[in-house]
Picture 1: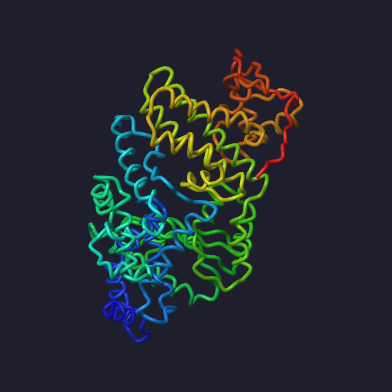
Picture 2 (picture 1 turned 45 degrees about the horizontal axis):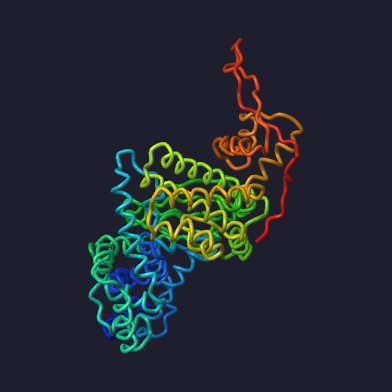
Length: 509
């Protein structure tokens, strides 16, 4: 502990040269990287997110090291920073209970669905075993098995007596099934940052570049705010990452994008005026990519309190914005569940149908979270499971951990379809509103053009078709020429709404 305290003092001393400070902090990163990662994994349940949180925790610790009054208290102080970063990823927008990021990317064409399924099963079993432990045992187990930390080091980090660490480990081992202890150790050590130098080197490289750049920017009285976004703010950085930063200036000059370099690291800097920043915040579609961008960014500093207020206001969701985002997630849900049904009915392929259901679960979770007026991002499943545990136990937990056959897969599809039916008005009221106000037939192209202006999305024709299948809207042919000079017409799908459903229902929370 004394050695750590010495490193903290060296990294924090005013008279220490910048390079010496960074060298001392780099050694601190080496010592604590696996503890930070293990702590974050115990909370988030996802290896990628755990690395994100650990990296951001070190960056935050470096920027705030002067606030640590007692160097010996660093382990517990740093643990609280890690937990803060985990909370930042999960508060109202990101919370993961089962590690499933990998399968939310579309499967490669040459991927064997059965192999992908087995890999997912192994990952899920490991995390399910850890997640089944009580919270304190889960954290202690992750920290113990991830590396060769002593029980004293773990106790300092957790700020509990060594005897408590021993008791938690003893109780956890009794709960882990035979063979699972080794599987947990293997999985954690395979992912730990110290398995190579990349994590520590990357943190040091980008810490130095960002620190140096911000020090220069702060001396410019015409720059009133700096906002960090991209990988360095909320995701895993690597040696080819750029630092993405938005600078807000006093001048009313046009928006500029600058490609800068600091200590060999590329910096993509967007420079805008205070008024341009205000318009950007107020004009963004809440709940979509721009709003998520604000939610996952970091306000490094500002000398203007109005900028701070605008920045924090960007993390709220308006009613109309929520309706549009619900519509997009509803479109995804229709698509994914249709794919799951196709692979089950036409191919009898349980593995691939299961994968498509997992894609559908993410969209389903987004819908549940947005109905609470919260911000969504990549990982929202367990947050939604807390909101609607009955549904998610059936279509998610029981499907993952239980026996999978044609009947159980079909039941999950049926439950999701029933969910769509029940929430039809909540999900698709923007489409019904548009058709209701049109007082006539509108072609697919016309509807798509309208919503493209609203949410910059591609065709939502699967929604129109789904509503027609449910006999909520009427589908009719509409003649269209393929080119301006075409003499022959073909039929395009068109729709009209006769008002049989209330177009603007009140969402219940």
